[in-house]
Amino acid sequence: MTVACNGLFGQDQIRLKSGEVLDGTVVKYDEGTATLTFKFDKGTLGYGQADLAEVKMKERPGVAEGRKALAEGKMDEVIAAWKGPANDFVGINNPWVLECVGGLGQAYLAQGKVADAEVLYGKMKKSYPSGPAALRAEVGLAEATAGRDVDGLLQRLKGLEGQFKEGLRPLREDRETLAEYYFARGETYEKKGDAKKALEDFLRVSVLYPEPPSLGKRAEKRVEALRQANKDLVTD
Image (cartoon, rainbow, N blue to C red; front, top):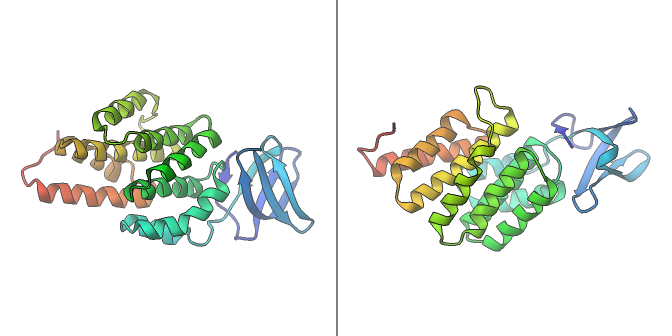
C-alpha cells in the first residue's frame, strides 16, 4: 500500500479501487489482517489492503520531535515519540512511518534493548514482504540477532549488497534503504576497528543518502568523531 503525506491530521484521505474517495482519520493498520481502520463522518470502518488504491496521511504529533531527538542521540525521547506511530502504522508504505519504525529499532539497539528491536524488525518484515522496506527490515534483523558476532554481522550485511538499487538516481525509498544499510555497515566496521571503512560508509550516508534526515545528521556526527579520533585518516 502506497501512502503520501498530504492533508491535515484528522483530514487524512483514502481512495478505494472502486474510485470512491473518503476524508477522515487513519486510526491504525493491522498487519495481521492487512486492514486499515479509518474514521470518518459515517463511522469507523476497516478496509482491506486489497480494496485500497491510495492512502494520504499527515505526520502525527511527536514525529518531528522524535526526528530531532534521533539526530541528537537522545534515544529515550525517540522511543517515547515514535513507539506509538511505529506500532500503529507499520505496514503502511509511507516515508515518515518507515522512518519511525527504522529509527525506533535503532533506538532500541542503541539502548541494548535487543529483544524489543528483534520483535519490531520481525513485525516490519512480516508487514513489508518485498521491496525496499523489506530490505530495511532485513538490515535491522541482522543487527538485532548478531549479538557480539561482529564478523558474522558484517557477512550478513555484505550478503544483502546485491539486492540494493543504487544507480544514478535511485528512488526515495531506495535511497533511504541504502542509508540504513550503509549506516549499519559503518557501525559494524567501527566495532571491528576498521576506522577507514567505517568513515567511508558514514560519508556515503551523509553525502549521497542523507535521508531520512535524522540518519543523515547522525552520520555527519560519526564522520566528525572518526576524523577527530584519527587525524591522519583518509578515504579512497
